Each structure stands twice: as structure tokens, then as C-alpha cells.
Image (cartoon, rainbow, N blue to C red):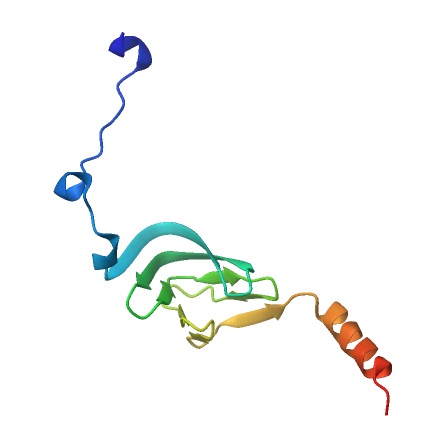
Length: 122
């Protein structure tokens, strides 16, 4: 009967599966890595890079090797293999030289701002 179902690969878990996730310091992935994360406002951003490292203690994410981040408001990318983008736990970002940012929905935001100005009473 097991042969009919096919052999399911078993993953060996450390400490018999009793793993303390609070002991994780960093998580790193390499290759064509894709990740999603949600900010405090509930907005989802997507990231892609050759390597992504997450520091659990500081909450920082570092993307290296042609990094791209797509947020609800902007697309941040750098095609250089030596490039990096650091995302701080508060959502601020720092990137290497050559990074380009394309803002999304700028026209809508500007028109919304103009509407707010006209709705104000002196």
C-alpha cells in the first residue's frame, strides 16, 4: 500500500521536532529568493533578490544581488549584482548607489491631496 501512495520524503527536524523558534537569530535564503511581508498598516510588500537575510533580533531584512521590492506605493530596484537594500524594522530603507525608485499611483495621491486642500475652510 505504501508503494501505491509513493514514498513521501521525511524531513529530519532538529531536537525531534521540539524546536524553540525564539532561539532563531537569523534566517538566510539564497538563489532566486522571493518573500512577502506585511507592515503595521496591513499593507503587503514583495521582495526578490539573490539572497535575503532576516535578523530576528533587530527585525532588519537585507536583500543582496539585484534586489527588488514592490510596495503598495513604490517599486525599488537595482539591477547590479553587488547592490543591496536594507529594510529597517520601522519600514525605512537604505540602498546602495544605483537604486531606482518608481512611485505608484502618484496622480491619484496628488489629486487626493488637492481635494483635501479645497475642502478646508479658512
